[in-house]
Image 1 (cartoon, helix red, strand yellow):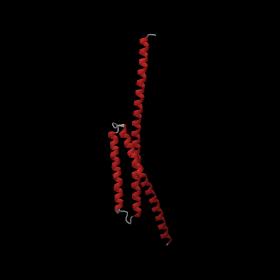
Image 2: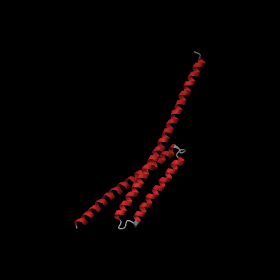
Image 3: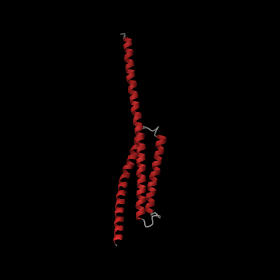
Image 4: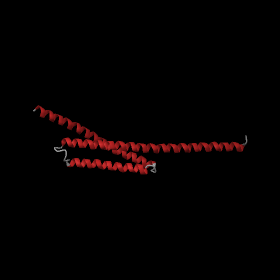
Length: 151
């Protein structure tokens, strides 16, 4: 075979391998970005569910504890405002995802995922405490009703 033909074929093989490597790297990067955006949307949904669960639990607890459930106590208002602020912040995050995520760097996406994970991690003990308090309150109400019935 001709030396120039062999060099041409070798160059073509090297170029093909390089192009395949670049394509694979680009694909991995695109898959990572898509995974990050998907994870971010999934976390936003979970955080919204957590906040709505917290809101419902607080409303239920305050209704049981209140003498007149139609007049919320100041602590209920503060809790409601805190949950509403969390939902507004989440809405801002969803707007950022919609508007900025397609152009955001991988680092920005990773930071957003990390921040949302941290927020859920901080909310989880509060939800657990609310659940325990609701259980204790329900038990106390049942005991109170039982005592009234027995009396």
